[in-house]
Length: 461
Ligand code: PMP
Image (cartoon, rainbow, N blue to C red):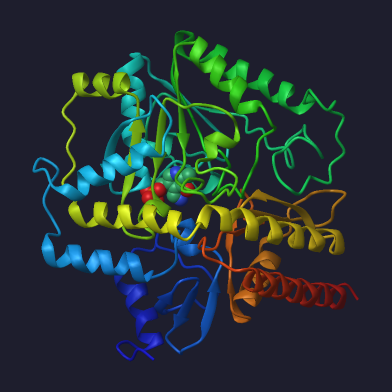
């Protein structure tokens, strides 16, 4: 037990001294004291299986011994100097990370957060194309800085305050909730329950959504596009997958109008999707710019933008760009250790194996409970979308979602939330998770849903 601050004292301090925009998960917020791999421990010594990884961030495990050892060595050697002074950890990292990306994505900028990475990618796209308009999906989350808020199209983050100009939302090709799409349109071991009229070699839903996308392109300023941002699978919007082939066709259309294509790999990168190291590879596309954060540092503040030599040059010709902490020795040493651990411990392979195993098990819950509308995802990025019933696909009311979420926590399982109505549970454990732990999570979820159905039945009588 960690004795420094009593639980109620923490709540008082939070209320008085921390900004009210810093909201908490759970009716009774968790006070966490310790973490080890996929486990977290609260102030009372209760343990939780962390199936949300501090919002899809702890990639190789909390306080992973190798990453900790590397951090401690670097901490006693040199823990800060800005990137204007060269130091081996930054150069070693640049070499290691670029080796993981295909040609011509070989030039790296290191920053501290996903928002900063996307800020920089926005500047790059505009500097390179000399165009202004940037396109992103409805439901996209690309950051919370005033610049990236223009790209973020999740309802709660929209504001009347003046934010970035020149950002155009476009329809999200959401094959579960959108007007088109069905059983065979997505790349997941679990297919949607919606009926599908697509032929095996042509996706009707993809064609419909592409028509909408063309419409956005045609209405942009002077039909000139600076860039198109897309998460390979949407995270904050509730693990939303696009129809197969959509991104490939969209990328071609954007390039035809002079724009560049940006893959936001903040949640999907570093092997989490199992079949591939990067999410864009699952769509068979080659972006011009790739942004990454979260899992890159296993929870240490670090992010990166990778691009082509030409685009990097356009940025350098347009402005001086400097970042005090970006590419610091401690972050870079940690980043290198994370890459080594992913390889040594075969964590991408584990994401594929345990993720697929777990997806199929969660899909059984969809077959058992009418309020589980969809189970989807790839590897260790899983969404469970809750509905009032499968026929209507109306979102389950927020109070009911809150209760199920809280019940899972009280049984020792932490999961995430997402979607416009907060209707989708998100499962994204550290990539070291095991099958017995996946079984435990499915069992807890089953139990929470059964309890919920009992409550529902009682309240209806
Ligand atoms: N892009 C995506 C896809 C994200 O999920 C997030 C964070 N949720 C960001 C960008 C922004 O990252 P950060 O919070 O590190 O600024």
